[in-house]
Amino acid sequence: MSSSQLLLLAVVALALYGVGQVWLVQVSSYRLWRLVGNEDFAAYHAAWWRSIWIVILVPAAFVTIGAFLMPWRLAPGVPAWSAWLGCGLQAIVVLGTAAWWGPLMARLETPSDTLSLERYELLMRTHWVRVALITAYGALAVWMLAVSAFDKRA
Image (cartoon, rainbow, N blue to C red; front, side):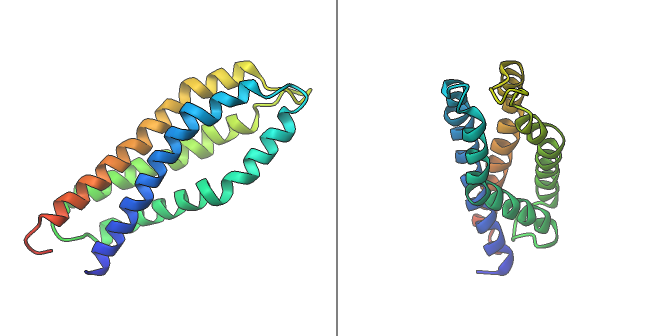
C-alpha cells in the first residue's frame, strides 16, 4: 500500500469518526444542556469544554491536516477536484468553528452563569450547517476511497 493510500485510509477513518462524533453531539449532548440546572451549568459547561480536547479537537485537527495534504498526495484513481473540494469543506468547517460556532459555544452562559436559552437555540439551529459539512466531507472521503479501491493502478 502506498503512502497516498495510507493517507486516504487514515483520513477516511478520521472523517467517519468525526461524522459519528458530530451527530452524537448534535442529537444527544447539546440537547442535554437544557437539563442541567442553572446553578450547575457553568461548572458543567467548563467540564464539557475540557473533556472534548482529546476526543473531538485532536481528531478534527488530524482530519483537517490530512485533507489539506491529499491534493499533493493523491491516491491512485482519486480525481484532484475531489481532494480540493475536501479542502474547501474542511476550510469552511474550521473557519465556521473559529468564527461562529466556537465563540457562540463560549458565550452560552449568561452573566449569572446560567444557560442563555436564546444563544443555545441559535446554536442548535445553526450547528446543523456544521453537521452537514462534516457529514459531506465524510461521504466524500468514503467516495474517494471507493474510487481508489477500484482503480486498476491501485
